[in-house]
Image (tube, rainbow, N blue to C red):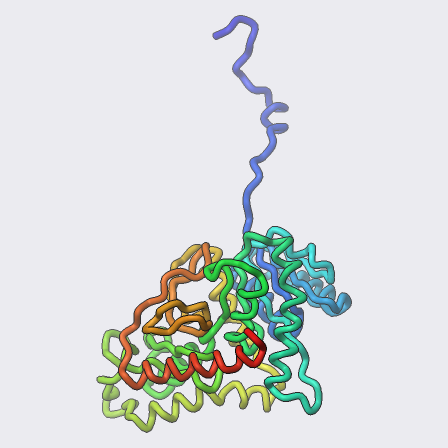
Length: 336
Protein backbone atom coordinates (compact mmCIF):
# COMPACT_ATOMS: atom_id res chain seq x y z
CA UNK A 1 0.00 0.00 0.00
CA UNK A 2 1.35 3.44 -0.93
CA UNK A 3 2.49 5.51 1.97
CA UNK A 4 0.10 8.25 3.09
CA UNK A 5 -2.86 6.99 1.06
CA UNK A 6 -5.80 5.51 2.94
CA UNK A 7 -7.93 2.85 1.30
CA UNK A 8 -10.68 3.16 3.93
CA UNK A 9 -13.69 5.23 2.82
CA UNK A 10 -15.28 7.51 5.38
CA UNK A 11 -19.02 7.47 6.01
CA UNK A 12 -19.25 10.84 4.36
CA UNK A 13 -17.53 9.57 1.21
CA UNK A 14 -19.83 6.57 0.99
CA UNK A 15 -22.91 8.75 1.38
CA UNK A 16 -21.66 11.22 -1.19
CA UNK A 17 -20.91 8.59 -3.84
CA UNK A 18 -23.18 9.22 -6.83
CA UNK A 19 -25.71 6.52 -7.61
CA UNK A 20 -25.48 5.05 -11.09
CA UNK A 21 -28.00 6.36 -13.61
CA UNK A 22 -30.46 3.62 -14.55
CA UNK A 23 -31.93 3.41 -18.03
CA UNK A 24 -35.70 3.25 -17.70
CA UNK A 25 -38.36 2.54 -20.31
CA UNK A 26 -40.49 5.29 -21.81
CA UNK A 27 -43.80 4.94 -23.63
CA UNK A 28 -45.40 7.84 -25.48
CA UNK A 29 -49.01 7.82 -26.62
CA UNK A 30 -50.09 10.31 -29.27
CA UNK A 31 -53.74 11.24 -28.86
CA UNK A 32 -55.49 11.64 -25.49
CA UNK A 33 -58.93 10.58 -26.69
CA UNK A 34 -60.86 7.51 -25.54
CA UNK A 35 -58.35 5.03 -26.98
CA UNK A 36 -55.18 6.93 -26.06
CA UNK A 37 -56.18 7.70 -22.48
CA UNK A 38 -57.43 4.16 -21.86
CA UNK A 39 -54.23 2.74 -23.33
CA UNK A 40 -52.19 4.91 -20.95
CA UNK A 41 -54.31 3.57 -18.07
CA UNK A 42 -53.88 -0.05 -19.21
CA UNK A 43 -50.11 0.35 -19.67
CA UNK A 44 -49.76 1.88 -16.20
CA UNK A 45 -51.89 -0.80 -14.57
CA UNK A 46 -49.80 -3.54 -16.19
CA UNK A 47 -46.50 -1.81 -15.32
CA UNK A 48 -45.51 -1.78 -18.98
CA UNK A 49 -43.21 1.27 -18.79
CA UNK A 50 -41.55 3.39 -16.09
CA UNK A 51 -42.56 6.63 -17.83
CA UNK A 52 -45.76 7.19 -19.80
CA UNK A 53 -46.14 10.40 -21.81
CA UNK A 54 -49.39 11.60 -23.36
CA UNK A 55 -49.28 14.05 -26.27
CA UNK A 56 -52.29 15.86 -27.71
CA UNK A 57 -52.90 19.26 -29.30
CA UNK A 58 -55.73 19.84 -26.80
CA UNK A 59 -53.69 21.13 -23.86
CA UNK A 60 -56.49 21.20 -21.28
CA UNK A 61 -57.59 17.67 -22.17
CA UNK A 62 -54.13 16.06 -22.15
CA UNK A 63 -53.07 17.76 -18.91
CA UNK A 64 -56.31 16.71 -17.23
CA UNK A 65 -55.93 13.09 -18.34
CA UNK A 66 -52.34 12.97 -17.06
CA UNK A 67 -53.35 14.52 -13.74
CA UNK A 68 -56.23 12.08 -13.28
CA UNK A 69 -53.94 9.12 -14.04
CA UNK A 70 -51.22 10.51 -11.78
CA UNK A 71 -53.58 10.61 -8.83
CA UNK A 72 -53.89 6.82 -9.07
CA UNK A 73 -50.17 6.00 -9.28
CA UNK A 74 -50.20 4.93 -5.62
CA UNK A 75 -52.33 1.94 -6.61
CA UNK A 76 -50.24 0.88 -9.63
CA UNK A 77 -46.69 -0.33 -10.28
CA UNK A 78 -44.42 2.70 -9.79
CA UNK A 79 -44.32 5.00 -12.81
CA UNK A 80 -44.38 8.62 -13.91
CA UNK A 81 -47.09 10.11 -16.13
CA UNK A 82 -46.69 13.27 -18.19
CA UNK A 83 -49.16 15.10 -20.41
CA UNK A 84 -48.44 17.96 -22.79
CA UNK A 85 -49.36 19.68 -26.04
CA UNK A 86 -45.61 20.04 -26.72
CA UNK A 87 -44.27 17.21 -28.85
CA UNK A 88 -41.02 17.36 -26.86
CA UNK A 89 -42.83 15.32 -24.19
CA UNK A 90 -42.23 12.31 -26.48
CA UNK A 91 -38.45 12.82 -26.63
CA UNK A 92 -36.28 9.71 -26.22
CA UNK A 93 -39.22 7.32 -26.17
CA UNK A 94 -38.66 3.60 -26.51
CA UNK A 95 -42.14 3.05 -27.94
CA UNK A 96 -44.51 5.56 -29.54
CA UNK A 97 -48.12 4.53 -30.02
CA UNK A 98 -50.19 6.69 -32.38
CA UNK A 99 -53.93 6.71 -31.65
CA UNK A 100 -54.68 10.19 -33.03
CA UNK A 101 -56.89 10.39 -36.10
CA UNK A 102 -59.14 12.78 -37.97
CA UNK A 103 -62.63 13.20 -36.55
CA UNK A 104 -65.48 12.16 -38.79
CA UNK A 105 -67.64 15.05 -39.97
CA UNK A 106 -71.33 14.86 -40.92
CA UNK A 107 -71.71 13.44 -44.43
CA UNK A 108 -68.07 12.32 -44.57
CA UNK A 109 -67.49 8.83 -45.97
CA UNK A 110 -65.08 6.26 -44.52
CA UNK A 111 -62.79 6.84 -47.47
CA UNK A 112 -62.86 10.59 -46.88
CA UNK A 113 -62.07 9.97 -43.23
CA UNK A 114 -59.16 7.71 -44.15
CA UNK A 115 -57.76 10.40 -46.44
CA UNK A 116 -58.01 13.00 -43.68
CA UNK A 117 -56.31 10.63 -41.21
CA UNK A 118 -53.44 9.89 -43.58
CA UNK A 119 -52.98 13.65 -44.04
CA UNK A 120 -52.91 14.13 -40.25
CA UNK A 121 -50.35 11.36 -39.79
CA UNK A 122 -48.18 13.10 -42.39
CA UNK A 123 -48.09 16.18 -40.17
CA UNK A 124 -47.58 14.36 -36.85
CA UNK A 125 -44.99 11.76 -37.78
CA UNK A 126 -41.94 13.77 -38.97
CA UNK A 127 -41.59 15.81 -35.74
CA UNK A 128 -42.13 12.65 -33.70
CA UNK A 129 -39.32 10.85 -35.51
CA UNK A 130 -37.13 13.91 -34.95
CA UNK A 131 -37.53 13.78 -31.14
CA UNK A 132 -37.68 9.97 -30.85
CA UNK A 133 -35.65 8.56 -33.77
CA UNK A 134 -34.90 5.22 -32.09
CA UNK A 135 -38.41 4.43 -30.88
CA UNK A 136 -40.49 1.55 -32.16
CA UNK A 137 -43.67 3.05 -33.64
CA UNK A 138 -47.02 1.29 -33.30
CA UNK A 139 -49.91 2.64 -35.38
CA UNK A 140 -53.37 2.13 -33.90
CA UNK A 141 -55.33 4.74 -35.88
CA UNK A 142 -57.80 3.31 -38.40
CA UNK A 143 -57.81 2.27 -41.18
CA UNK A 144 -54.68 0.85 -39.56
CA UNK A 145 -53.29 -1.12 -42.51
CA UNK A 146 -53.39 1.80 -44.95
CA UNK A 147 -52.24 4.24 -42.25
CA UNK A 148 -49.29 1.97 -41.42
CA UNK A 149 -48.27 1.75 -45.08
CA UNK A 150 -48.56 5.53 -45.47
CA UNK A 151 -46.58 6.12 -42.26
CA UNK A 152 -43.74 3.94 -43.52
CA UNK A 153 -43.61 5.94 -46.76
CA UNK A 154 -43.75 9.28 -44.94
CA UNK A 155 -41.26 8.50 -42.18
CA UNK A 156 -38.60 6.60 -44.07
CA UNK A 157 -38.28 4.29 -41.05
CA UNK A 158 -37.32 0.64 -41.54
CA UNK A 159 -40.31 -1.66 -41.87
CA UNK A 160 -39.25 -3.43 -38.66
CA UNK A 161 -39.39 -0.19 -36.65
CA UNK A 162 -42.94 0.84 -37.57
CA UNK A 163 -45.96 -1.44 -37.70
CA UNK A 164 -49.66 -1.45 -36.91
CA UNK A 165 -51.69 -3.03 -34.13
CA UNK A 166 -53.38 -5.04 -36.88
CA UNK A 167 -55.60 -7.93 -35.85
CA UNK A 168 -54.27 -8.42 -32.31
CA UNK A 169 -57.65 -7.20 -31.03
CA UNK A 170 -59.60 -9.19 -33.65
CA UNK A 171 -57.72 -12.35 -32.63
CA UNK A 172 -58.63 -11.67 -29.00
CA UNK A 173 -62.29 -11.32 -30.02
CA UNK A 174 -62.07 -14.60 -31.93
CA UNK A 175 -60.57 -16.46 -28.98
CA UNK A 176 -63.17 -14.99 -26.62
CA UNK A 177 -66.04 -16.20 -28.81
CA UNK A 178 -64.53 -19.67 -29.27
CA UNK A 179 -63.97 -19.94 -25.51
CA UNK A 180 -67.51 -18.84 -24.77
CA UNK A 181 -68.96 -21.41 -27.19
CA UNK A 182 -66.79 -24.34 -26.09
CA UNK A 183 -66.67 -23.62 -22.35
CA UNK A 184 -62.86 -23.72 -22.35
CA UNK A 185 -60.69 -20.98 -20.81
CA UNK A 186 -59.79 -18.32 -23.36
CA UNK A 187 -56.11 -18.75 -22.42
CA UNK A 188 -56.26 -22.28 -23.86
CA UNK A 189 -57.63 -21.16 -27.21
CA UNK A 190 -54.95 -20.54 -29.84
CA UNK A 191 -56.27 -18.90 -33.00
CA UNK A 192 -55.40 -15.93 -35.20
CA UNK A 193 -57.26 -13.53 -37.42
CA UNK A 194 -55.19 -12.49 -40.45
CA UNK A 195 -55.44 -9.93 -43.25
CA UNK A 196 -57.08 -6.53 -43.02
CA UNK A 197 -58.20 -5.11 -39.70
CA UNK A 198 -61.65 -4.75 -41.17
CA UNK A 199 -64.32 -6.39 -43.25
CA UNK A 200 -62.03 -8.63 -45.34
CA UNK A 201 -60.19 -10.18 -42.37
CA UNK A 202 -60.30 -13.95 -41.93
CA UNK A 203 -59.81 -16.46 -39.09
CA UNK A 204 -57.06 -19.02 -39.71
CA UNK A 205 -59.14 -22.02 -38.69
CA UNK A 206 -56.82 -24.67 -40.13
CA UNK A 207 -53.95 -23.75 -37.79
CA UNK A 208 -56.09 -23.03 -34.69
CA UNK A 209 -56.19 -25.27 -31.65
CA UNK A 210 -57.85 -25.68 -28.27
CA UNK A 211 -55.26 -26.98 -25.86
CA UNK A 212 -53.42 -29.52 -27.99
CA UNK A 213 -56.47 -30.42 -30.07
CA UNK A 214 -56.66 -28.98 -33.62
CA UNK A 215 -59.74 -26.77 -33.68
CA UNK A 216 -61.15 -28.45 -36.79
CA UNK A 217 -61.11 -31.75 -34.87
CA UNK A 218 -62.84 -30.32 -31.80
CA UNK A 219 -66.11 -32.16 -31.21
CA UNK A 220 -66.97 -30.58 -27.91
CA UNK A 221 -66.88 -31.90 -24.36
CA UNK A 222 -69.76 -34.01 -23.17
CA UNK A 223 -71.54 -33.39 -26.45
CA UNK A 224 -71.48 -29.61 -25.96
CA UNK A 225 -69.58 -26.88 -27.79
CA UNK A 226 -68.91 -28.51 -31.14
CA UNK A 227 -67.44 -26.11 -33.72
CA UNK A 228 -69.36 -26.97 -36.87
CA UNK A 229 -68.92 -25.07 -40.11
CA UNK A 230 -72.05 -23.06 -39.36
CA UNK A 231 -70.80 -22.14 -35.87
CA UNK A 232 -67.42 -21.06 -37.25
CA UNK A 233 -69.11 -18.89 -39.86
CA UNK A 234 -71.25 -17.26 -37.18
CA UNK A 235 -68.22 -16.59 -34.98
CA UNK A 236 -66.28 -15.09 -37.91
CA UNK A 237 -69.18 -12.71 -38.67
CA UNK A 238 -69.43 -11.67 -35.04
CA UNK A 239 -65.70 -10.89 -34.91
CA UNK A 240 -66.09 -8.51 -37.85
CA UNK A 241 -69.36 -6.97 -36.66
CA UNK A 242 -68.53 -6.63 -32.95
CA UNK A 243 -66.77 -3.28 -33.38
CA UNK A 244 -69.82 -1.84 -35.16
CA UNK A 245 -72.03 -3.14 -32.35
CA UNK A 246 -69.87 -1.55 -29.64
CA UNK A 247 -69.62 1.77 -31.50
CA UNK A 248 -73.38 1.83 -32.01
CA UNK A 249 -73.93 1.31 -28.30
CA UNK A 250 -71.26 3.51 -26.70
CA UNK A 251 -69.66 5.56 -29.47
CA UNK A 252 -66.19 4.01 -29.49
CA UNK A 253 -64.20 0.89 -28.64
CA UNK A 254 -61.54 1.60 -26.03
CA UNK A 255 -61.05 -1.06 -23.33
CA UNK A 256 -60.09 -4.12 -25.38
CA UNK A 257 -58.03 -2.17 -27.93
CA UNK A 258 -56.14 -0.51 -25.07
CA UNK A 259 -55.36 -3.89 -23.52
CA UNK A 260 -54.31 -5.27 -26.91
CA UNK A 261 -52.08 -2.23 -27.44
CA UNK A 262 -50.49 -2.56 -24.02
CA UNK A 263 -49.72 -6.22 -24.80
CA UNK A 264 -47.85 -5.15 -27.93
CA UNK A 265 -45.99 -2.48 -25.93
CA UNK A 266 -44.86 -5.05 -23.37
CA UNK A 267 -43.68 -7.43 -26.09
CA UNK A 268 -41.44 -4.65 -27.42
CA UNK A 269 -40.14 -3.24 -24.12
CA UNK A 270 -39.47 -6.67 -22.61
CA UNK A 271 -38.04 -8.05 -25.86
CA UNK A 272 -40.35 -11.03 -25.57
CA UNK A 273 -40.22 -12.24 -29.20
CA UNK A 274 -43.93 -12.88 -28.76
CA UNK A 275 -46.03 -14.09 -31.68
CA UNK A 276 -48.64 -11.41 -32.42
CA UNK A 277 -50.70 -10.80 -35.60
CA UNK A 278 -49.54 -7.22 -36.17
CA UNK A 279 -49.88 -5.31 -39.44
CA UNK A 280 -46.51 -5.00 -41.14
CA UNK A 281 -45.04 -4.59 -44.61
CA UNK A 282 -44.97 -7.99 -46.27
CA UNK A 283 -42.44 -9.12 -48.83
CA UNK A 284 -43.16 -12.43 -50.53
CA UNK A 285 -45.31 -13.81 -47.73
CA UNK A 286 -47.11 -16.68 -49.47
CA UNK A 287 -46.49 -14.61 -52.61
CA UNK A 288 -47.91 -11.37 -51.12
CA UNK A 289 -45.72 -8.25 -51.27
CA UNK A 290 -45.91 -4.46 -51.01
CA UNK A 291 -48.81 -4.22 -48.58
CA UNK A 292 -49.27 -3.89 -44.82
CA UNK A 293 -51.58 -6.51 -43.37
CA UNK A 294 -51.67 -8.83 -40.39
CA UNK A 295 -50.03 -12.22 -40.11
CA UNK A 296 -48.51 -13.84 -37.01
CA UNK A 297 -45.05 -12.34 -36.47
CA UNK A 298 -42.36 -12.14 -33.80
CA UNK A 299 -42.45 -8.85 -31.85
CA UNK A 300 -39.54 -7.74 -29.68
CA UNK A 301 -37.26 -4.84 -28.81
CA UNK A 302 -36.27 -4.20 -32.42
CA UNK A 303 -39.92 -4.11 -33.49
CA UNK A 304 -41.52 -6.63 -35.80
CA UNK A 305 -39.28 -9.49 -36.87
CA UNK A 306 -39.82 -12.70 -38.79
CA UNK A 307 -43.31 -13.45 -40.06
CA UNK A 308 -44.39 -17.00 -39.35
CA UNK A 309 -45.10 -19.04 -42.45
CA UNK A 310 -48.40 -20.32 -41.08
CA UNK A 311 -49.81 -23.29 -43.01
CA UNK A 312 -53.05 -22.24 -44.69
CA UNK A 313 -55.79 -24.00 -46.56
CA UNK A 314 -56.43 -23.03 -50.17
CA UNK A 315 -59.50 -21.04 -49.10
CA UNK A 316 -57.57 -19.19 -46.39
CA UNK A 317 -54.75 -18.32 -48.74
CA UNK A 318 -57.22 -17.06 -51.32
CA UNK A 319 -58.94 -15.00 -48.62
CA UNK A 320 -55.64 -13.49 -47.48
CA UNK A 321 -54.82 -12.49 -51.04
CA UNK A 322 -58.26 -10.91 -51.49
CA UNK A 323 -57.70 -8.98 -48.27
CA UNK A 324 -54.31 -7.77 -49.53
CA UNK A 325 -55.88 -6.59 -52.78
CA UNK A 326 -58.63 -4.73 -50.88
CA UNK A 327 -56.01 -2.83 -48.86
CA UNK A 328 -53.94 -2.08 -51.97
CA UNK A 329 -57.01 -0.69 -53.71
CA UNK A 330 -57.61 1.79 -50.88
CA UNK A 331 -53.91 2.72 -50.78
CA UNK A 332 -54.00 3.44 -54.50
CA UNK A 333 -56.86 5.87 -53.93
CA UNK A 334 -54.40 7.94 -51.87
CA UNK A 335 -51.63 7.67 -54.43
CA UNK A 336 -49.62 5.31 -52.22
